[in-house]
Length: 363
Image (cartoon, rainbow, N blue to C red; front, side, top):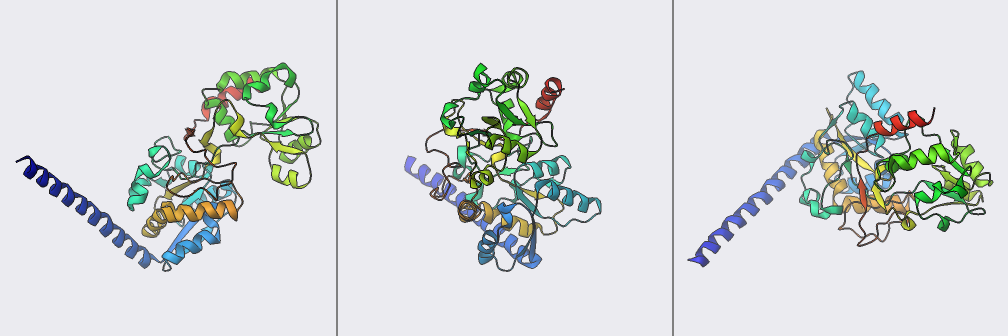
């Protein structure tokens, strides 16, 4: 009797599994056919989605879907999309970039939830992604999908003639008396808060008390001209800098500048925040089926392998996919997650409390 009951249960489970397989395959076939009829896709964003090598790999699989891309600075891309929509022009289908541009679109209610667009089992199966789940960077956890999980930078750099990167092993080191008057920082009161600073505010090991001490007691010099700050660091006017930019350019010019690697920090590593790339589905998309086909291909093992290889070897931008079922040999060391190490994943970060703190202490 028990064997018969087990056999019946097995048959029911097998039939249910077969039905699920038939369901996604049928949905995928319908979507691909509809996408071919649409014949095109309009993708906005950064090199994450505009690199010709990525698009060529997609078109090798789906040659019937012509991809038009619109690239540029994140703020410019966002402004363009919103301007188009104000003029009742709905041109963009998807956007892939760093997190700031899609967040602006989220606030403007210009995005659709993206999970309903996932069809392929290798995309919907959350065990294939870091931490066994899908990660998002919007407060509702459904609009801005994080597909990159590179180890975040510390945001710190040093003049190696004055300070060795190994001398700093914690953010708290920099509130010791020896560093008073010797620290540079990009002025955080600009148009957008530096994401590493936002991550520090929300880090339980650092937080608002640390930032208050740093900015009120350490005589930090603020700069707004990014080239000036990096130049001051390079010529030795200051030994340490928070959020100096274009360090690779300065290094090529022979300036003694080096980033402080996150691996040596006591606070532990993080992934996400400003060091992540995301993809979003824009609502009222003119080519919704082509958008779904591209999203599923892009987030598949094949798509993420192509993206990861192109970004690291051709774009030369350290990039580690959130997928854990693809090889990581091509990921540049600065971005690669260490096997077996747990990282704090930074998704949505509320800017308001940090803005309030900065308004209070930087008058």
